[in-house]
Image (cartoon, rainbow, N blue to C red):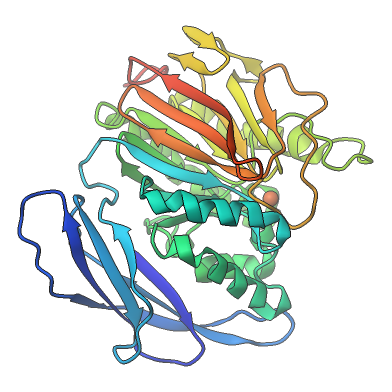
Length: 408
Ligand SMILES: [Fe+2]
């Protein structure tokens, strides 16, 4: 488990942690363990230089049945104490894995519904992690990086107590995504190096793949696209080899591959996100996902909630059995957009006036998703309206086989 924090002045980097509750009968050792980390100077300014130190340290040898407390600091000065669940990827535990998931969360008043609801939500300790699918703060570099700092302080109550897993959106583009890369350190892999652009992990019955969809929109990122694609091909191959252990493959990213025309910009002749950008992304990712039996795409960017049926090549693909809120043995990926945690403007999209025929549910309430992978046969997603304090939509995806695509 990695902790990251910022100080203005250079100082040592240390984290102290200990288990305070374990479900097994073992005797708890109450002594603190200590780990040293490293720090480096980052320039968070936009028009002028504004420096701070980003520190990061990793807590190791955690037990998945224990809860931990920790604080970070210099060895002389310490933060307040935070808590986290010791269940981490690759711990061999294939039971329930549940997450909060959203995209497009800012620092302004439209994010307030979500910020308030999440504080309550996370008291229950029901979730393993939070997933933020790009577009942070609007924008982190604004006011010489103070908006980024404000955002990090806003999310601290949850991000310090839960793993905060990220992908990059289009609002992180300043200086080649410098704020994203500096502030969020995601699991490392050989191909992505230290970029946090793309990575995958195994947890519970899931193989989760986090992609950088922004790269597909800029020619200058052609090498990143190639590197990511080659990595993705190998990653999917490996995930399919392990499918009997983790039958669910979920891809997470910022930009949707499918969404309905949403009239985000009423005067604009064509909707860029859904009519132009989404088909472009389909051309890069859809076949790869389909031939590898990917079960679900979770994305954001469009500022609403949209749940679609299983789709391939813009056609609804029937499952063995479909109802409004359930798909049994789907035969193509299912697509969900959850991009309305609270963006910068009061541009809460009116729910699409022309939902596509594969669209199953749309909502323009501010809120977030609750995603639960129960076991090898059942996963569940529901969209919670933070604004109206109720669940607005839910879906069960059920299967009694490892994959709809043939496995080698
Ligand atoms: Fe976006």
